[in-house]
Length: 388
Image (cartoon, rainbow, N blue to C red; front, side, top):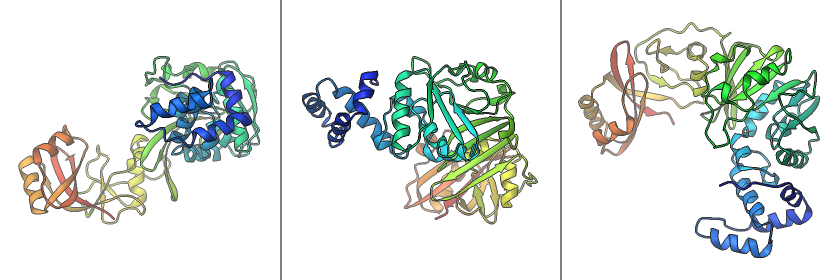
């Protein structure tokens, strides 16, 4: 059960005494084997404050992989789960550079701190006074100074700024919301509360955006191969109907939109198999991505692509052999190529990769990937080696 912070907790944690106490707790292992002893020590050293201190240090450690500078932040467990990873927040903020921006669900300020670095003027508001106090602390940590107000996202307190929102995707029981109408606040009510305003609303990438008829653009964003969010854009912020943005640590980002050419042929298996990034697939832009990189589809209804030269900077699969899929034939191919470690990718066929691997019992000394898919009506297996 996550700790429920109080206003007194936030005041203490942000004070000089609180910072010293947090530094002391940060030296604890806080591992399962030492947890009971660490809790006992924290209670002895800081009576009355131990739960808040322990929770904060644990959350800061979790946040390191997600939020830049989080070692000095104040967080709640729920807020950290929903917070946008810093590289994704930076990408979204670039489209708001130089604008007046109002984050109407600012929570602990993960987006707000980034927005404040690019916006002309920035407002953050939230109904939760604890999260609002944490946002004030966190923005100060990174040198940001937005205007912060306690306000309901459904009752506007600004009139012309771009509205940025990240509705909660879990209810009071912790269950995840999958429909736009189940968000908190409900998305249709949020949109109706800000008529005529430019909007940027962050949502889960697994939601059905067909119900968001008000959105002028749906953007899917991935980070290092994982689809992290969808952003629904309205008004002058939208520049296409559908967009996929692929962010990769240490590499240039890649964006494809429905305005790009989609003249993608269908072809037999070539020298390479390319499995497009999940943001591209989720945005329905596989053909546009293929056309940009000179690739072809194996089947017009399946996302796997093929070609003689894979796009730079991505994981591609070099084809070893291919043919009609059948377990007996596949098992023989694995023996021929001395395959032991086997990755199984499936699209378009009803195959359980784990169950199949167990039945195949590969026992060789090399690693390979098999792509199982449907080409027309033919179940097809493509045995591959991963690119370096």
